[in-house]
Length: 95
Length: 530
Image (tube, rainbow over all chains, first blue to last red; front, side):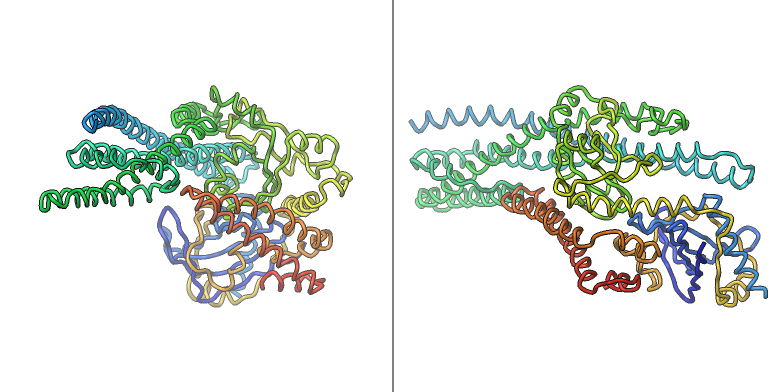
């Protein structure tokens, strides 16, 4: 299986419409998976969860769907893949 | 004689006035009924969406526990709900058409009523006298076929009122000059009356025709009512996997519709999006989808208005399928169960589709087949890629810029949300995500399989197909629509123009590829980006 190159985005913003509201978010990283043929986006609205940790959202965009809908990631295989990406990033952050 | 004529006209206008008032009342009631039905459908769609979200959350909770519980029934339920929504949206679109139609009709009736009321005033009577005196004036205006749109009717009515007002003022101030000015009014009024008569006849005929072809709003309301009563797919979406076959979304079975459906089911249109072919019954296409620029959004959710490929006899299609001439399988959907909104047949899903590629006889349907093959390969490749996807080795690599710039400096601790982030990307996207905007065919260039796919298709034949068949077809439709001045055709025209431009773009793109002898993936990507 081919590697999926993670692209890091610096100072790039995206706008997400959710529940009728438009939220400005920082785009953190993205990568295309040749396995799922989807693009994955990691972004944050810089909000904090109840434990004071920054919320980071990861969503999939299916380019073949013809719109720019952010899909939940619910497939366990996709979850594993995202987890690995994040773990790598986390390891590198602490190295 | 003049008095007698006036009395007759008074009586006729009074009778007509009563009729028009009743018609207006009826139309208003109908508009209100439509509004309620539309609201009801919107609510049902919203409920379905809420149910889908709920199921999604339930599924997430199960997955979070990581106990390997089979969650496929949740997927099925969500799929059923979304399928139900498709049908509800189709019904809504139909109701919206009727809403527009009745509103337009209402304006015309109100104009007619006001004209009658004005004709019954003293000024109106005098004008009528002048009309009676102007022999042959009706004959002249009988030949004029204009003012078919509501907008023009409104304009004429405005002009008419001004003339009446003018006559009234002239009469008060300069009685002696009255006859001269009245003759001016006579011309305008007689013209308006005639035009409105023609207009009303046109509307009447159209109304009859459309009623005959289509369901009435009351029938649709009843259908929606029925749909809402169905526990599967509309409200609860609790169909289990083994019941999926029977879990028909939002059945819209209507008395009367069945007969019409049988009469009109012999032809289908075929259209496509990036993932699949769709078939749409000719009468449904003509009746509903052809009218709106956003028609196909309802069915495939793709931001492309019209992707009609070919009109084909259904029997021929079945024969082709039976003879193995189609590169995919089709199945007949029970139209009695699904009602008249359904196309009657559909393409089998990738999971169902396991057969080998059949031999194609090029001289029969060469263009269509080639294009079908292209789409089929595209779809299959996507399906295969996704099926192949496994959790065992994802081989993700990354640079460490992200960590330095964000995680370490800004958010050493973070919580990742994978399944409550659904939304939509709006606004201007950064350049790095621009490839996501636009046609799926552009997005396709991002993936490696494009090159493999390209080598297996004949670009020239696809281009010929687009040029010779699809664009010609659209041109003919455009010509037809250009001849008509009915308001809704403006929308159809813009839709057709858009589609034609889109096809031209694809055609040009393919030509570029051929001209540039694009052999490498980069070449193709470059061409597409251009």
